Image 1 (cartoon, rainbow, N blue to C red):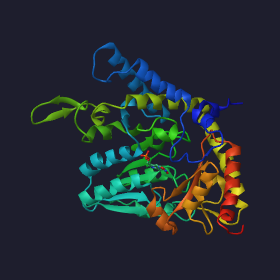
Image 2 (image 1 turned 90 degrees about the vertical axis):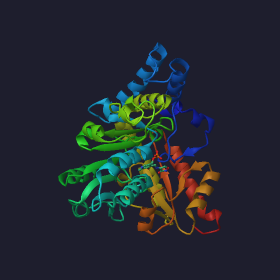
Image 3 (image 1 turned 120 degrees about the vertical axis):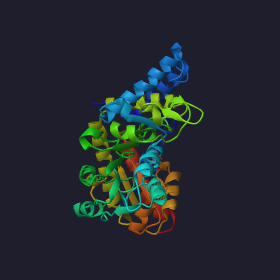
Length: 405
Ligand code: 7TS
């Protein structure tokens, strides 16, 4: 029997009536993470990687220790393959501005899916605009499945970059990343996985996947906002030009030229977010204590309860797969006759927090033929009671607006 992890989260004690079901947007933080950040600033604060005095060395050690933890979390071969960024968005932009602009040319193709978050679309549109490369979309079926035929026909010898979300933030579906990576490599393209919605919820192994780059955000996995990770295979990172330039990323600077630091520091210009990194390290320790088996088991049970409750309401339509096991913690839906923003506002009046809108995935929503949807997303600390309150609140939505059931 696991202890009650929910008790570690001060925000749930502050708002005991709240059902927090917007975990795909950002999670809450346990006291262990908040205390680790405080402890860093109270006991180890100095500018890391610069001073030779003891306190700065301590700050550097704490920062690099967090990098080790991130490397172990995703099974990177070496911690120098972990670059700290602000979030998944910055990680993907880093690849686009460095690898993308340096290596792509007119006629090349970048292959993504129709289910990507805008963060895995716009950086590639930028690369295409600057290089003349073309952006190609693998299209899922209505359940969110990318078929083998789609993979085979879209990833051709013209592809130089293939970038795919591990778990869709709208459909909740787990994408066939291994197949996509294999196909990308078979045509000589680099493979990128956006792990923003997978890393918090499942065991990730970048070496087993054989992925070239992998991105995730700390704030979706209990860590502070403003710290994220880009994993890259060392040989690729070493051959890429820097992204931002300035302090801390150099080896030697002359009036008209400069040489750069080794990876990962080449990609970490300026004073780093050491407090955030320490918080991420504490979040990783915490998640390892909770255990990914437990996380998956709890989320599956909560999603099953949620979808069974929703299935009893004929005016509710779940987007994507109709089976709970097809939704990795994320359930997106429509309510007949009621605008998604009204649904979320009515739920908010009953202290149920869900997300309404396009979820930063407008091409997918166009493909599905909707402008906006509602989305409920769980994490391991959610309870059956929160799910039940959500279902009760959903039952009230149409009555609230004068519709029959
Ligand atoms: N990729 C995916 C799959 C995401 O779900 C998100 C954020 C991002 C990238 C970007 O992450 P960031 O940390 O850089 O912002 N998704 C959401 C969401 O679904 N609701 O709010 C943010």
